[in-house]
Amino acid sequence: MIYISKLAYIVLNVSVIIFNALHSADVVAIAERMAIVKHTILDLSGKGGVGKSTFSSQVSFALAAKDFQVGLLDIDICGPSIPKILGLEGQDIHQSNLG
Image (tube, rainbow, N blue to C red; front, side, top):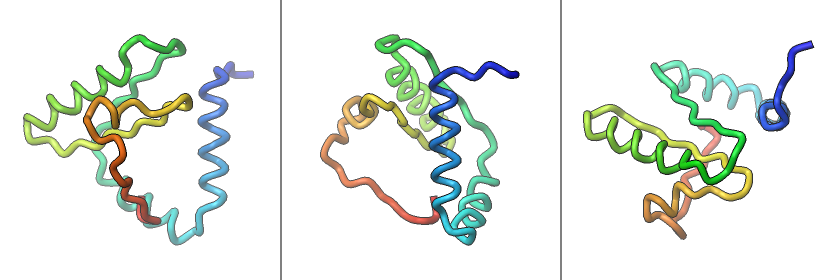
């Protein structure tokens, strides 16, 4: 048996639930859009308060300054801090079935 941390297990379960809840056409559309993503960076720690969001936002700014297209996803279970770091608190979030 492969050991999976509680966080990874939760993320996997949430991913399966989301995947199962999506209509198959939506899944195909999301997969097609994600196919153009060349690189992903995961900033993960089992401890809070170590600067994951600060690091992620700074890496995003640095890559964007070099003309890379950057997307930043904050899936913090205890509450996302990226909107606060970026000064976007209270802003609407764009949501669609296309990912």
